[in-house]
Image (cartoon, rainbow, N blue to C red; front, side):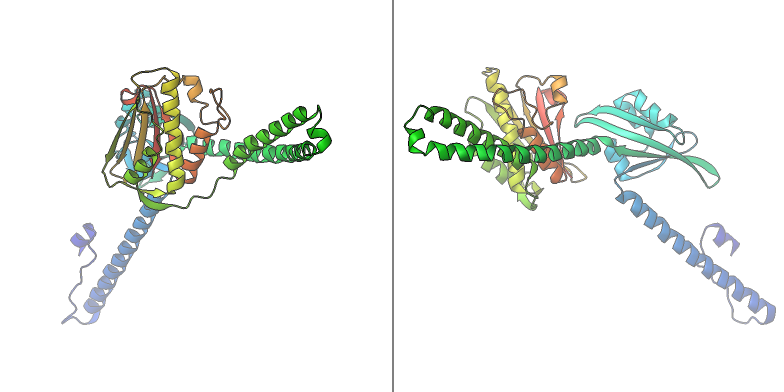
Length: 375
């Protein structure tokens, strides 16, 4: 019985046959004790599985370190945030620079720190917080990791959306009467046949054009709610390709792995994102006057069923300062641009539960690469 308990085996049952008096009571008590301990063990195992399930379900990354800084336990979110298949030791973070691993290892209880590093999928911004607890007589540190990039982007975008709705409402209310009254005056015989007609026509056309311009911003702030469904990326690409966005003098290559790759999102919205990115790539190449323009589209899926779509071109490199602004609504470097395309694409990806990012220039040999991520 003692050997079984030492091995945490509470399935033992002592014989009761042929026993009487004190021996019978003792054996029965020990059997009841074994049964009780077995039920307690089973309850603890269920409780442990319950907490592990919760740990794997949260989006916050959790890394537990012992007193020597060794990894005791992690969850899937931590590996994902750190762009690793699995986190078993802090030395894995050395690929992003020795300071990354050191920052996590030396973070003390009650402290917080920001962690920034660069990966092939773009720039990562994490905030770390540490607490210390005692576990089985030993002190361990629990490090919580959260992605502040998405949170900042969502808040920034939400502010722009509110500002856009207010501005478009006020501007439309001010311009609509001007457009309507100018049209009424234009149709009067004394105006149509007089010297004021050209001036009135100019007012009407300008106000009407401004209303159309403002209306495009209103569409940005009132984007339809996604209606996701499963669709073939190959078929989606064939539709986009049939629009003739890429001229014949620009080489466009496509690589999809596997060929039957399926996306679960709103096909109409994702098609718009692809069109926006292709138009940007073509315009960048044409404005640079390049004779050897190339665009590459690559779609793949990893072991965790996350889908990545890379859209690359060999056009001019995006300036580092401009790269931080290109997703801001209404920001544009083009003479005839309205700053809607990329901000709208980011809005669509956010609503679709995905992400769009501009990777560092030179990624996989391409000057400009946009990455679409779907989970």
